[in-house]
Figure 1 (tube, one colour):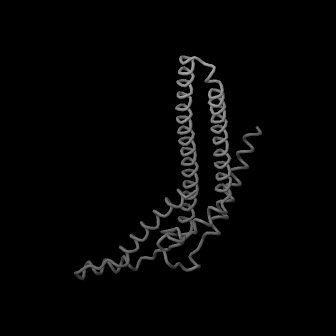
Figure 2 (cartoon, rainbow, N blue to C red):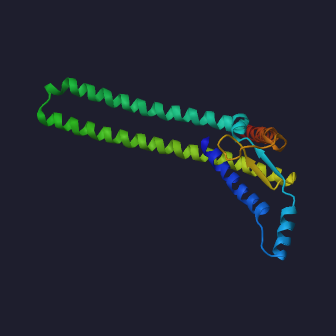
Length: 204
C-alpha cells in the first residue's frame, strides 16, 4: 500500500505551503500589513495522522492487502502451471528430436517458439492485471480515508489534517495533534457497518 502513503503525503506539501503563506507573508505598506495581520490571526486548527499506523490497523486495509496477496499467488500459480507445461513439451522434443525428420523438427521448433512468445505475453498480461487491481484497491482505500477525514475535519473544525511519518518532511509534531487512533476507530466502525450491510444484502 505504498501508493496510498505517497498520495497522502501530497497533502503534507500542500499544507506546508499554505501555512508558509499564512504565517510568513509580509507586505510592505501598512494597509497590506494590516490585512496580513488579520490573516495571521485567523485560527488554523491542525491535526495529523500516522499513515503507517493507520494502514496497519485499518481493517479494510488489512483485508484488501490479504486479498491482493492471494490474487498475486493465484496469478503466479497460473503462470507457473503454463510454464511447466511448456517446459515439459520442450523436454519431450529434445528427447525425440533425433527420431524426427528435419521438416518435423522445424515444425515443432516453430510451434514451441510461438508458445514461448505467448507465455511471455501472458506473463505481461498477468502483471498488468495485478497492477490494475492494486491500483483499484489503493484508490478505494484512499477515497475511504480521505472522505472520512473530510467529514471528521468538518465535524471537529479542522482546517488541515497532515500525514506524519518518517521521511514525510515533518521533523516534529506534538502528540496532542495526533488523531490517528480516533481516525482508525472511526474508520473501523464504518467498515464494520458497511460489511454487515453487505452481508445482509447477500443473504436476502
